[in-house]
Length: 216
Image (cartoon, rainbow, N blue to C red; front, side, top):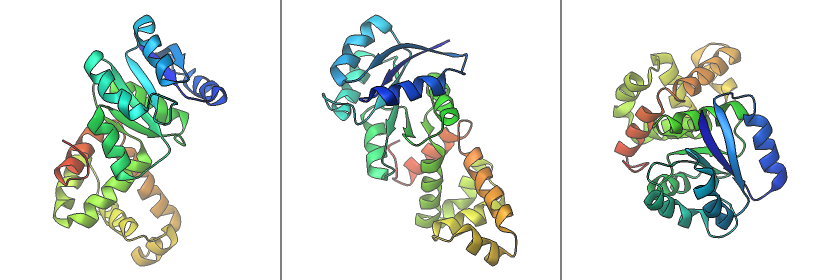
C-alpha cells in the first residue's frame, strides 16, 4: 500500500484528485494540505511514502520546500505537480529534489502511474513532457537518435514521426509526408508516448540529462 499525501491550494482541486485516485487500490490517501505550512505539519503525523506536491502551493514557496523535504525526509518520494511545461521549470523541480513531474492537466490514470512509479524508486515524467523532451533530444543531437531508439524501444518509423513532430508538423502534414493516414500517425504518436512512460522514463531522463536538458 502506497501512503500518499495530497497537496493543492484549492479544495475543489483536492476533491477532484481524491476522486481520480480512489479507484487505485494500491494507493491510500493519508493526509491533505492546502499550504506549505500544513504540509510540514502533516508529514510527521501522516508518514506518507509519497507527496503529491502542488508547485503553486501557498507559502512557503514549494521550490523552497523541496530541498527541505529532501534533507528532513530522505526516504520521502515527491511527485511534483505543476501547470508549466517549460524545461527550465521542470529541471528546477528535479534539481531541488522532486522525483517526478506531472502536469495539472494530466489524466487520473497517468497521475496514478506517476505515484506508483516514484514510490517504486524510479523517476517519472508525464507523457506530454516526455514527448517534448524526446523531440528536443532529436533536434539538438540527431546522433543520439539511435541510442534513444534503442533505450526507449522506439521503431525507426516512430523515430521518424518524432523527428517530424520536432519540426512542428501536424498529424495531417506528417501523414502527407510519409504517404500514410492521419490515424496511423496518431497511433505512432500514442505508441511513442506509451513507450516513454513508467517503464522507460528512467532511460528518457538519463538521455535528457546527458544532453543537458535535465540534471543527472
